[in-house]
Image 1 (cartoon, each protein chain N blue to C red):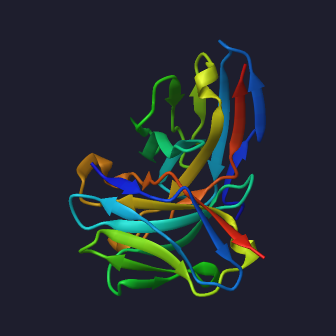
Image 2: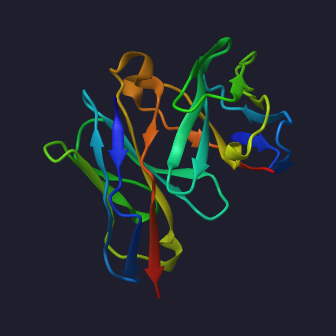
Image 3: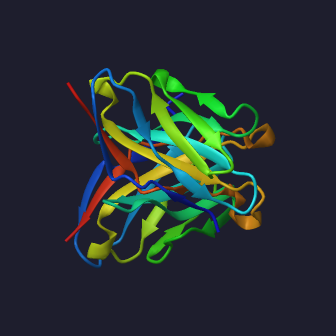
Length: 115
Length: 117
């Protein structure tokens, strides 16, 4: 198992550009999510999905779109990049177990800089 | 709403000494609690979790954590710190009975642990 993979590892954008951060998992997990990590802020949830075709907003969804057409993939789209979106982005997946004994697995992250 | 507080931005400890990284939480129901570790330029790695049962939970790399319901705390501990334990540690909580939010993990802001040789 590769676990949770993310591409690219690094990206530099200009203000106003759009791009898609890719996330894939091979563990057949139903639940996937996107977080951003900023210094002193911890991890904040952007969007999440509880299964193919089902997505919902997290704590900081503005400026981002997601879709979930397959169990494996959960791309995050930046519609019009802004300097405030400079951050490290993490994708995670989880399979709900009995009594919620699930563990969330994280990808290696994408470091995004918006100029 | 659920929340997590990690009151210390940084903890310094000498190698071989015991370490504690503090975490307190707030949920409306019974919490599911987690600790994750992040090494530089890496993703988060799962350390341990409390779901139910024994209040003392043992995890990876010799770490353990104690769930204290009356103090709403879930402090991470290790009897003897190693230099290789130096990393960023995150506490997280999930309230499985919070309806639409029950799927979501809420993270603390993280505590940087530095183990001094």
